[in-house]
Image (cartoon, rainbow, N blue to C red):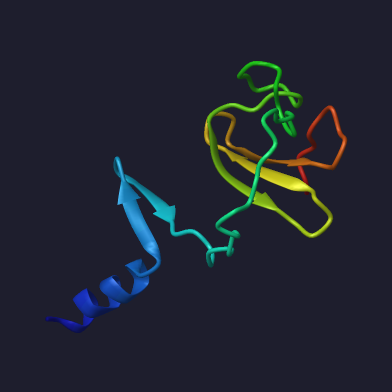
Length: 96
């Protein structure tokens, strides 16, 4: 195997391919207790205003990250942006 082929394999570690797109692998798994219980009713924490490109909408969400302040970052393929949703917000913002 050539050095270039080896480097490509190294570069692709931690990524998987789906429908022609590169999707990063998930972060380390979080241990969930086997007898954990969940609420039967959820709440909308971002979006919820039908799909679209307005700042209060999410269009084709592709990735999600929640930080320590409970701010949600949504990667949107449809609107080509990353939107930031603070806890309790009704609109997202586009961080600079």
